[in-house]
Image (cartoon, rainbow over all chains, first blue to last red; front, side, top):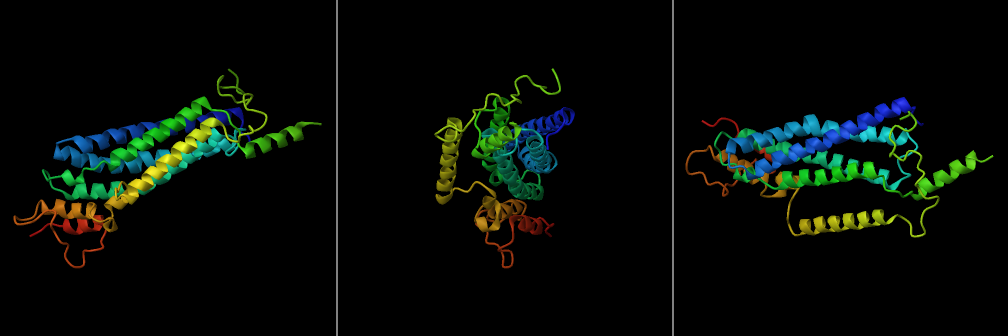
Length: 175
Length: 111
């Protein structure tokens, strides 16, 4: 079903806002993770791991789900389709993989927050530090930047399914 | 700017798309991306086989010395002197708990 221009514009706005918002939130998570890895202030490190879990559940996860859903609406409600163009297909893969990994990784962030909450002030948090949050946030940032780039450049390339659908449309439109 | 073409560069008319797929299949940028992804996946597998933990497994009880050790270390920081961080053996009944459960149990105020 093709959306009307007005609805399409609204859906596009929702998709851009949620996707760019997700990108920005991941950048914030990466900054927090770097602080947690490098800071010498034990209280700050503890706060970072507590904050990361909250940022995850209240910002990252909702924005990732919103980006995925609005992207599906955008693809299925326009003539771009979901499986017709490689760039759309690749964006879908990026979004699904990033969302699934995020949901799985929330368990880790929850456990890190548990450990941080269980410590008293001044405790040695050296063991709490680890490169894992930095690596995950960095990888997510790269993936989401790639998705944003695909959205802007829209590199050409029809899938076999897309080519077939185009042929069908052309055949149907001919008298 | 009209409703039918809200963005002049959005290629909504799909005019730039080829009429048929190229003889070699997917475009070059798709192939290059695929190769990069395969290389990264292989690299991750090699790292995993080499014993480098990076994900949730690092923080699960079954993951070994990750957060399970960490939980005991952290709680022992507040324990009386004589505690031996890193050398602690969990008491019977605690083994197999997830780190968070271990933390919660051990985070209880000690007499």
